[in-house]
Amino acid sequence: MIKNERQYRITKAQLDRFGDAIRQAEGAPEQGLDPLLKKAQLEALRSQYKELEAEVSAYEALQTGISHVVEVESFDELPSALIRARIASGLSQKELAERLRLKEQQVQRYEATNYAGASFSRLCEVVKALGVSVREDIFVPSEQLSFKGFLTRLEGLGLSKQFVRQRLLADDLSSEQEGDSVQNLAQIIFKVASALRRMFGWSLAEILGPTQPQLDLAVAGAARFKLPARVADRSLGAYTIYAHHLARMALEATPDLVTRSIPRDPMEVCQAIRAQYGEISFKAALDYVWNLGIVVLPLDDPGAFHGACWRIRGRNVVVLKQRTKSEARWLFDLCHELWHAGEEPELEERSILELSETDVERRNGEEEKKASRFAGNIVLEGRAEALVGMIVQETGGEIPRFKTALPRIARREQVSVDSLANYLAFRLSLQDENWWGTANNLQTPGDPWSIARDTFLLRSDISKLSTVDSELLVRALEESREVAA
Image (cartoon, rainbow, N blue to C red):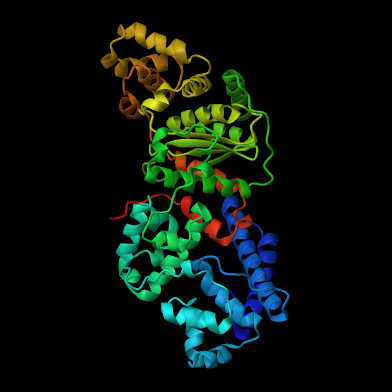
């Protein structure tokens, strides 16, 4: 946000430089540069250009009186509202300082840090001096709150400390040492409050107040469609709403993706993938699904759910969220979600949330069984049940012998060991046998998350999102790392 004439002149100059940089980048030869990297760089330049252009326009509008300051609805809006109010009223920083009986340099410091170091009483004085309309309940004094205390409060709202650090905070604001100062803590609160307001609709008063705000699961599809009973758990519910928000952002970043009819015959899908890409692999299936107009968003956070399929205003988003490195497992899950994406095509809104493969509710669901059989017949080219029958016949149905028999039969029948292991684990789960660990041991590790992430970046345009949402989405697409509690 531009706060004075000096910043206005600097921003105008930056705008010109970014315009030149974009024109040069568009016309420059690739010279070995990865096309995906060049696309991302151009998008970043265009996004920054748009933001600078918007800042210049907003400042000019405030100066001319075209733009009027609106009422402040939440604490995270207050700092920028105070600055806008001063500009719109025609006051310089020096004139505001005189009203407050302060030195001009103090007002400059306040505005340079978005009033991060200002006390509760000082904010009230500025509000009064500028005549800004503010609801009293947004003022939640945080002088006694530490960085650890703030993280603990958010944890009580269902947001783990690791999640907050990795997905909501920039690296330069996430250390406890830096967070101990009042100024940095205020910056952290403003940053997190802005993101949580976008996702959950919570005000700062609700985030820091004495009672816990409610999770509105209706926004994640719980109002009309059956989600697992455990989604009522606060941690799972909070992450579900977060993932649903990311899904909506993914749709906004892919406005030109054309939606096509989703085949219901697994052999039709199998044959189409083979015809177009020459093999049944995770990357081939991923491109096939994207070409049906289905956005595939990979996430890499521990716990919560294992996958989801949301239809929002007639468009499908598949969320893949497996911690395994097996491409065959990701392929199976992708085809499983493809089944869900094709169900009830007449509905504009639809929600499916996948818990662990061992979850009883998931295991016994009829739609889940159909989706897994559909997936099995795609990856095993229509022979899923026949191959399972061969394993049972050759082992006499003795489950301990399945692990050695499966690779032998897969090689003989010229099918993927990895994919057959996944399907057998699904079939055994119907008998309350947990064979998923054994299946995982039979699979070759790869990097399916990176494949899905790079495909998403190649096919989307994150510059179409707001700054808050683009930061959330980019951070969600970063690989998870372990962080001490």
